Image (cartoon, rainbow, N blue to C red):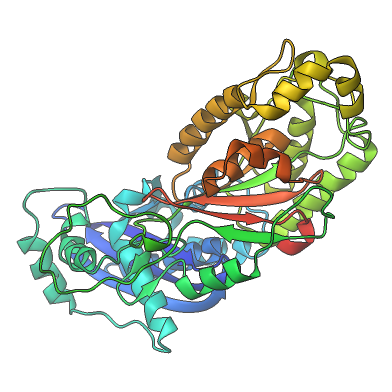
Length: 459
């Protein structure tokens, strides 16, 4: 009778693209025993490339144990699972050969695919981080135990029972936790190195500059409110005080949910700088806006990191999102919380026209986020619904990179909240049409913000 294996695989990139590695583990589906581990530092690559390489390595390890075995692949990469299951098209040129390589390892009838949450894939995640840490030291990853040792450790740690693979990873997880250094390649840390390298973060901050009104579309800024901190490994006790945040915070656990924030392309109202919110005419893209959407789609396709597309329901965002999603081979999900502010009576007016017609109301609006335009929404109300949408999407896309196609106010609000900036900072940011920004949300509550304002920076 053929054996049944579970292959858990993962990959990550510290920079995306950046130094990358993968890890995979083969588990006996009946006993939960760890039968084999494999990991490798692969140089500079994207998350998706590393994930595919981890899949290939895991399937090969399973085939080496029993070429007749049935294999259930479990990964937290929705992209890889859906593409290998045949439900999503594979359009990116870097993914096609890797997917073909994975499909050729074992007969198709022997392999099934299952998506699992990031927290259920800790064993493979740990191996991927170990491989990247080894690569950082100029070494290749090597297993810490023989197959027999792995089996014995798995049996010894099998109580209480848990998801396959968790027991064998428990001891390593505990050791890493004492060191304050467990995590996902793209955002967390593992023993011996950090996913978000503290030196790189510091360099980004030194290079950062403010984005002020009138900044050209070619300017860029990077700022971060997350950091890695080294911890001792003495294991003498656990600090029960409230954990620090920001630069003093301990290393985050797990990969971030990364939101790539895309302001929609230009509409006929954009160059005239008219209030255009969710309570107006809902204009479509202009010819210039459609060209901008095509350029953004090409830049994001070349980057190869976006795994899902979510859009405001307003027409200009849907048109932009559909252009990008078609290029990436993805569907578009609509999220009402990402719609623009309802500017009420000011819809379609320029700032000068609004000041002339509603001088007192405009002055009060500029002075307080709790004041709404006549018949419209206050920035406080917008912040509330944008925050709710953020939390919903952060949970739905944990550990993944998702493109949010939205508007000026929601983008500024997400950036402001991530940086802990005051409400008045909304008036101090300039976002060009079709500009890109990014916010990575970590499990410890920290966030890393990158303002690009130019699709050229993604190439």
